[in-house]
Amino acid sequence: MSSYQLGRYDIKEVQLKMLEILTEIDRICNKYHLRYLLDGGTMLGAVRHKGFIPWDDDADVMMPRDDYDQFLKVANDELRQKNMVFQCIENTRAYPYNFGKVFLENTRFVERFTAKLDISHGVYVDVFPMDYVDTAHYMQHSKMIGHYTMLRYYKLGISKRAKGLIAKPMPLSLINAGANAHMKYLKKKSGLVCKLCHHGKNKPPIPISLFDHYTELPFEGRMLRVPYEYDDFLKGRYGDYMRLPDKEHRVPIHDLLEIEI
Image (cartoon, rainbow, N blue to C red; front, side, top):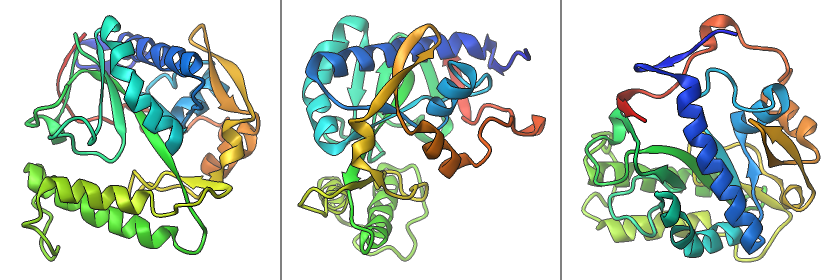
């Protein structure tokens, strides 16, 4: 198998740090009876590789909003003993994203885009809240979330792409409140949830029932959650997902300034 590098490290060394974080997320969710699933390439890796995709420098989980909010309440008390921290817009002023990350504090994984921000810069796992949606209106709210996200980037000084945006003088607290209001626009629980938090990379809504009907698959020697219907999920997102991409596309994706593990 080919070896992939991140800085002076073999990517497997970085993935093992991400595995430590995934293990803790799984432990906390089991302890507090919270729903989660592996997401995206991490789910694909579980099915196709029984672990990380060999060139993947990213790990993702998704949670229904109710479970995400509960995770936010308990995570840092639980993670502190493992030298980890959960950061999100609700608890970290300079945090730029609409979803949270669990960081491993004694590492450095500094991305160019966020390098100047006063946030953790360790190896991390993304934690995506999945919000209730209806099929008629969710794309309108997604566009508004994108508007607020670009305002936040502008306010934090990490993007100048605010030309034409209204309300540039708006304080950060109101920008975050606006984004949250649009993510949580549907007050009643529906049968569908969507990753509204990640504007521009939204996938179609998925049934909330996927989170209740899950199985566990081997992942780097651990057992982590995927939906029973993982085959349908992965075919819908990736097509022929068991086929490896062309060699030139088998590369890590992050633009890193510094890495230390």
